[in-house]
Amino acid sequence: MELDEGTPSSSSACPPRLCIFVSTAAGNVARRSACRKSWFRYLTSEDSPLDARYRGDVRLVFVVSIESQSTELADEQAVHNDLVFVDAPEGYGHLWRKALAFMAWLEARSCGGDYDYVMHADDDSFVRLDVLVPLMAHWPRRRLYWGYVWDGTGNRVTAPIRNPANKSYMPEEQYPLDYYPPFASGCGFVLSRDLAQALLAHPLPDYRLLDPPFGIHLCGNDMCVLPDGPVAPVHDERVRPYRPIPIFRPDTLVQHYLTPEEMRPFYQQALASAAAGAPQPAPSEQGTPAQLYDTLVALGLLRR
Image 1 (cartoon, rainbow, N blue to C red):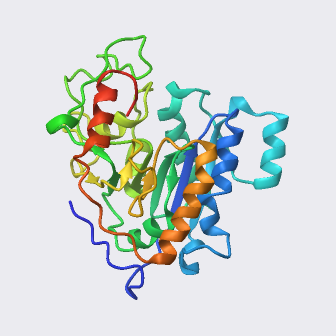
Image 2: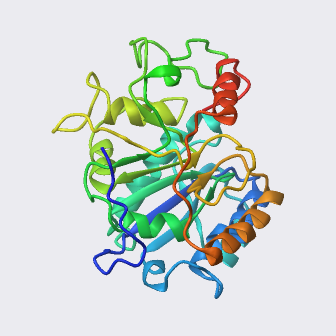
C-alpha cells in the first residue's frame, strides 16, 4: 500500500483528527518534561512551523498506569493536564494492555471520541508533527496501519522469543507460529480509528510485549480480527527505531532512543530545517546504521 502524501499547502488537504498517546512510566519525569519542551511545542509555540489549521485537531497525552497515582503525579497533572491514567499495571510487560486500555478510554470519552487516527509513541521518541500531520491530511481514513514495519522478508523476518526470561517472551499458547506477520515498531505507529475499534471489539490475550500483537491481529491470516481480512501495513523508512548517523536528519518523521538532553537540540534542528525548506525524500536505509541495528536486535542487545 502506498500513501498519497500530497503537499502541505494543498487546498484539498483535510486536517486529520489525531490523538497521540505516549507510553510513560511514573518515574520518567525528565522524559515527559523533555517532550513538553520540544515536539509538544509544535501545538503551542509561536515559532511552530506546523500550520495553525492543523493544531486544533491534534491531541497529545501521556499514558500512565492507574496504580502509579501519587501526589507528585497529581501535581504534574494540575500543571500540564496531559496525563491519562489507565487500568493497566506498570512496567514494560504491560504496554500492550496499556495501549488497549487507552484506546478504550479514547472511544468512551466524548471529548476524545471523534478522531480519525490514534498514534502510539514512546517517551524517548521525537515526532515531527510539522511534517507528519500535513502528510496525514491526504491519508485514507480506514484500514491504515503505518510505521516502520518489520515485514517478514529479507533480514527483517522476526521469530517469536520463547525464552520466558526475555522481556519480549511470547508463549506458544498465545502465538504458536514460527514467524510473526508484519508489525510496526512501537516507537511510533499510527492506526486508523476503524482498526482500533476492531481490536477493542474482541477479547485478546494479555501479551507481555507491545509491537507484534498489533501485527498478529491486524496483518496475520490466522488471528486477524478484521471482518474484511488482514491489512497491508504501510512501511515508512522515515520512522527510525534506531539511532542514525547523524542523529538528526531533516526527513525523519519519528526518531527513537533520544535522551531527555537530546530532545530540545533535536527540536531546534527541526525548526531550522523547517525554516530552510521542505525535507528531502527519504534515502535508502540499507546502510550501516540500519544493518547495525538489526544485528544488535539479533544479539539481544536492543529491542525492536
